[in-house]
Length: 303
Image (tube, rainbow, N blue to C red; front, side, top):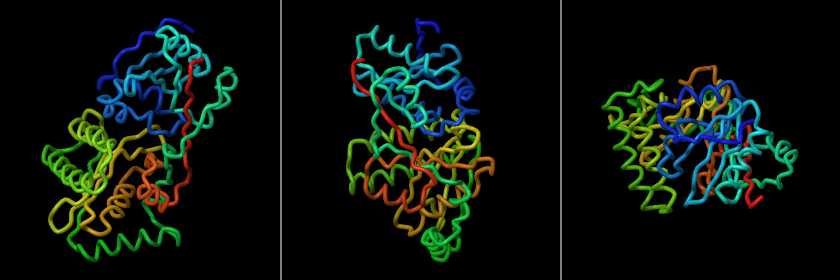
């Protein structure tokens, strides 16, 4: 294991290299989505390095150094390398993106216990549940979809696969995002929403380069919802954004159902990310009965 790391800024040209480390793996959390990493670059300034066929990520939040849990062939050895990197910069060692399967590695390395934060647990669903809405537990979601289709018989869903978005569709999504933000910022102002908005706008403007997949929902001859995301690995698709106008009852349920229905059957799971402790968002995500809540842990302190 080499001790000297050469971190570089992440860029759009790094996509295939990231897929080399993530595609065949079993890690399903959204922190490993290349599209997410690029879209949040304005906040984190993420950098990467590879050592001994293991990917290392570091970034800064409000000026404080952070690492992601290493992933690849030798994560345990890479932990020691990250400890040395933090010590070299005289920074506290703070690592996040830790999942339950990583905890034995941390203990074996003699590191302190990592702590989970419920607000950042990710919601993992079976794609067939979201696409089929079968059974009594999802009856309410079927009712929302049926009501929407009754109220808006001219409704239409347009799927946008593999980065194939048109300039017109990009403009439609950007305008819809602006409308959604204006309405929701007035009702529920909080600082994180503007940061998320920047990430969404970046992704929409780089839809092709990021090879995103998305969809637009129309009713009454106008766009009322859009969504997009990308694959985390071979069997898990991550939904990065979903915005709908609540003026059209059931729009959220229909864009969710339509998008899941159009994704390739090779995706067993859909990650709909965290609720960030927002009560209404938590209630909405739980109402779809996730297959798993993927707890994420952090380890903080000077080691």
